[in-house]
Image (cartoon, rainbow, N blue to C red; front, side, top):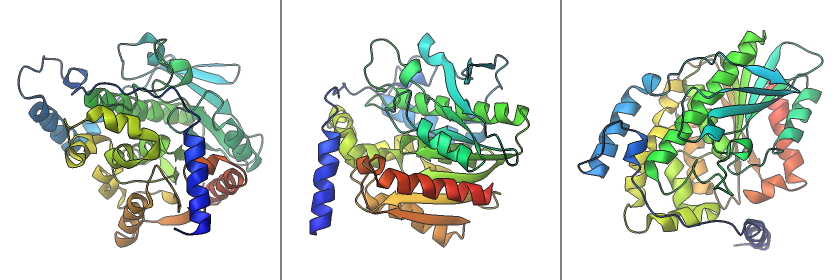
Length: 337
């Protein structure tokens, strides 16, 4: 490891250590989050059967009913999530709307990273406005205003509860598609999507199931949701929660239903142009996993561009990398929407 790489690694770890409220939660299969009948048998087998069926008919799995209670008040759009959870706070979706004052009718749904606060990516939305693009920044399930009172972090979106994590990601995908519906109702004809980290995973799955999207930006990429959780610096507390109950390969199989790898084949013939962003010193989305995505797009001749950041995961949010990243995303969307 060279001098620059060591410096970047030390900076990443320093930034990661700022969060002192990570909790190691007990492992749970979470089959009750997915099946209406009690799991009286082998939970692992039941989960595998459920996931296999969901992947095979993902159009049905990610199907939803368009909300009928959209409200825009003070620049904040709210509506009822198409998929309900046991937590009332989480069942109302919040999205900050930043309409552009000029240019063609084009808009982007912006999906921030895991544990983003309510102010996350608002600056990026304003930057998109400067490029003549409207932005709708959605809070993912269990984040900021959607967080149940017993939580300090968005642990219910990603945790060692396998079934609840599947349910939360499915909810975020359908919420994102409902945001696209609202933008279409407002007359926006050119729709895009931009996701960062966890938001990138949600954006990939949304894109694969919605041909209205003409441009996608994926800020940090990995084929499998589980690989990031298992090996990433920011998710080692979740990894510890699994203990010896499941292996990395088993978790990859269970969580393939919420992984881009299961749906990238659907992008063949899709009308979108895509920007894949990865960081050469990423400590959370390890480069070995990001390169798998780049290779898939290249080998399958899918329309895409690649942008490489000379930093890590946490440092992407630090100057000057945050500006470099933001400008790359906005310029791509300006050209392709």
